[in-house]
Structures are given as C-alpha cells and as structure tokens.
Amino acid sequence: MSTLPLPATSTAPLLLATLHDRVAGVLIGSALGDAIGLYTEFLSASHAAAAYPTGRFTLTGPSPTPFKLDSHRAPKSPGHWTDDTDHALLLLLSFLRTASTTQPANQQPLPTQTDLAARLRVWVTQGFRPLETLPLGLGRLVGTVVATAGFETDPEAVARGYWERTGKRVAPNGSLMRTHPLGIVCLMREEEEGFKVAAELSRVTHVDPRCVVACVIGTGLVRAVVRGEVQGEEGVDEVVERAVEWWEKEGRKEGEELDREELWRHVKPKGGLKGLELDEQAAIGYVYKTLGSGMELLRMAIQRMAASKRGLLERSRLFEDLITDLIMRGGDADTNACFAGALLGGYLGYSALPDHWKHGLTHQEWLLGKAEALCQVLGLKDGEFNGMEDDDAELQAGKPAISQDEMEGRWMVLQQTTFKKMENAAKASAAASKSSGSGWSLPWQSKDKAKR
Picture 1 (cartoon, rainbow, N blue to C red):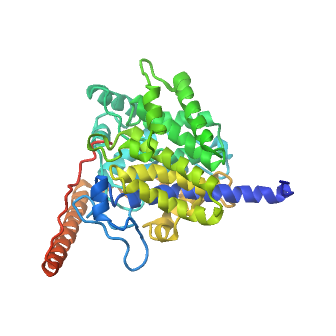
Picture 2 (cartoon, rainbow, N blue to C red):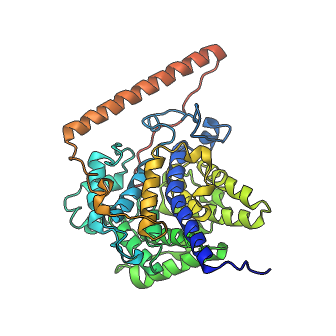
Picture 3 (tube, rainbow, N blue to C red):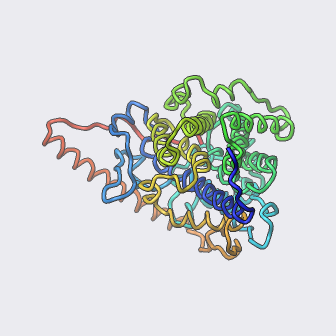
C-alpha cells in the first residue's frame, strides 16, 4: 500500500490535533470512568447486576440513570466525579501553577512532593477549592498520613513511617488513581523522567514498592498511548518491562524487593477481568487489581480495533462497552474505571468518548478548560497561558482559607440534604412496594475506604 504523500505542513497540524484530542481524552475519560464507576463502587458483581439490571448508564437528558441509593452514593448526584479525580487534578493544578507558554514544553517545572503534600492537606481539611466540593471518600491511609505532623515538610518520611508501623503489608490504590496526569505532563519528555516523577509523587502517601511500580507503569502507559507508541499488545508489555527495569536500577530504595511473578499475574491475568476477582471484598483496593483491570481494558481495546472492519463505529462504542463491563464487576469500581478511563481515553481520544456520558459530566467545561491550558503549555494548541494568573491553580484557588466552623456548617448541610434524599427514596420505595406487593431491600452498606 502506498503512503499518502502529505507535505510536512499538513502532517504537523494533523499530529498536533491528534495529540490534543488524546490529552483531553485522558482527562475526561478518567473523570467519566470515575463518575460511572460510582454507580457500583463497593458492590459485588451480583449486587451490581441486581441494582442495574439493564447494565446501561446515561448521564444526560431529563432522567440520568439514578443511583440505587445508599449512604455511600446519596451525597453525590449522577455525573459527579469522586476523590479519585480530585486527587489527580491536584497534580495537574500543581503542574499548571508554575507552567507558562513562554517556556519549552520539556523544560516546565514538574510537581514536587511538598507541593502535592500541601494540596492534599488543603483537600483533606477544606475540599477541592476550585469547585468548592467537599472531601468525600477520604481513605484511611491518606487521611492518617496527611494528618501526621511533618507531612507538609517531609511527606515521604511520614508515609514511610506509616507503612513500616503497619507491617509493610498493605498496598492500596490511592496513588495510582491520581497518577495519570503525569503521563501527559511528561508527554514531551524522556520516558525515564516520567518514571522518576511518578515514583517520587507516589511516595508522598504510598511508599510500598507495589504502589510505586504501579504508578511508574501507569504513567508510562498513559504517555505511550497518547504518543501513539502502543500499536499492539506487545507495546503494552514493553512499557511494563521498561518501567520495572527502571525501578530496579534507578527507583528502588535500599532493602525494597518486588515480586515480578505477582505483578505479571495481575497485569496479564489468566481469565482476563474475571481472573482479577475485582469484587473480592478483602482486597478490592489492592493496587494491582486497579493496575491490571486498566491494562486489561487497554488490551481489549487494541484487540477489538485490530479485529473490527467498522473502524469509526467500533471506536465510538469501545469506551462505553469496556468501562461498563468493568464497573459491573463491582469492587472498587470508580478507581478501577478512573485509571482504565485514562488509558482508554488516551488511546481513543476525546472525540470517541460517548456523548451521553461526557456531556452529562458535572464540571466538564471546567475540566476541558484545564485540558486546553495544558495543551497550550505542551505546544499542542495555539494560545498563551501563565499559571500564576490562573487562580484555580493557586493552593487555595485564590480564595481565603475555610475556617473549621464553616466546614462543619458545610458538612451539616450535606448531611441534611443526604438524609432528605434517603428519606424521599424510602418513601418512594414503600409506595412502590405497596402497589406491587413486593419490596426492594438494599443488600449493601457503604464501606470505609481503608484501601487508600
């Protein structure tokens, strides 16, 4: 087959437009996975099937798919993302704060441990300041580490102390869920630079080697799919091999070991997603489950695109089909789908994301604005940007700090709103039960996010 003889003046704009679409795809795709995953978070696969028998979801129109209400989902509304995306955006805003279109893309300052620590402290105590949302979903590990004295000055030491005191056993997914922006921040840098910053920023809260390596792999994969370097499944494996090799030579701390066999059992699971047992209650937040599920969806997307004779049609259906399949397996569904959504969004691009999801994403316009700013900084889009002029990127989003009394008031309002929502749902359920002669019971309870 002959190649199309496009001049360089044509190919350069086409390449930039493709990269622009993929960068937006990472950010919106991850937020969509997070928002859709909330529907089934902490449920078993059987409970998810009972709660959502059609296995289809929409975020747009007069009637977005309602949650099966419990105390975990009631504080949110369909289309809202969760703490997973909040934390990822802390990293993005940290980068944007010092970024400027006056500097080359590969020389922009990268986020630091202390800046992320300061932003996490603000989030835990005051919520996500740019959008004034509360810090819902705070996990035990992050909550404990962030609240410890000395965290803002030496977060890695504090995180390591917690890990050692808890027996070096737990490897939750709280740093992997936020790592994907680093893959696009480092788009114009050498791969090893992305590996390095991913390892450093994982250790702000999660120092277990499994968490660190998962972040290194995840960051490398996002960067590679956006750059178009992953054409087949072998490309996925090659990123994993390079990431592990880098960790063993450059990223490992003294005394740390990594079980390669355990890693590969999860990133190439026998039986695919089923083999990962994502709703295994004792281990739903295990970092390798999140890593493996995202990588498995990426492999499935590559396989389906290679086998399809309906390229554009298949591309437009892939994201929804695969993310829905993933979240209906329950477990830590929002985190699994957040990471998977970043990979699929980077692979397929924003234009391939389902309209009835992305146009129902709460704060989509705000998030797209940040994607546009990032693309300007990376040289993928015309325009000027100076992070020092973007209030959202400032630590407190350019606003006065919220007092403890005001935060308590906000929590009280949320509790009242949630109680009213649950009360109304109970009345509606009772009325439906009376008319049909059968009732609906909720067989699940909200779970503490000990994993993170």
